[in-house]
Length: 216
Image (cartoon, rainbow, N blue to C red; front, top):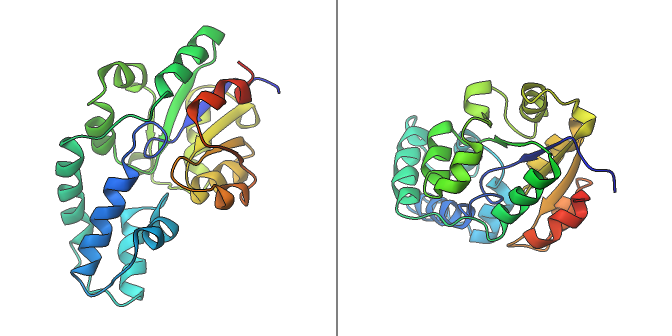
């Protein structure tokens, strides 16, 4: 397989294992507002989206969502993530292999810079490698599944879009990569990966598989 000239990593669910924490918090919050959803439903509906999108869909489903819900939820989420957010096992080894191969990498996330600072900041070696290569939907004003976030990341790194490869764990992120004309590996640690494959992603269930898939 042809080596990429750039690898763009999603953050939540690919670099740090924050999705289960976030999903449980959304589930519990919405249950208190009259909307009962399972964690599987939360994952299907919301993973890879934005908190504004969660608020809008939850409102459409009948939850009582106040105007300041997004800001309030973020504050609670940031506090919980700061208590401990594990890194994805094996991801630093993948970065080591990319460094050895001379292939640059960066992050393209729907999460805010503050959120990435909290989660990645708990893992200094990981954060130090990425802190100047973080592209956020909050600062760029374009969120997945729109391809603009990944296109901006490739442009910022000086690499043509078709020479970049994306690692993402959500259907919306894989769709953004496809729309950007980028090859995509769907990282499916917590599910079967069928929804990622439906977005033309090559599914991987273990970080140890990625170096071979990337041709390094």
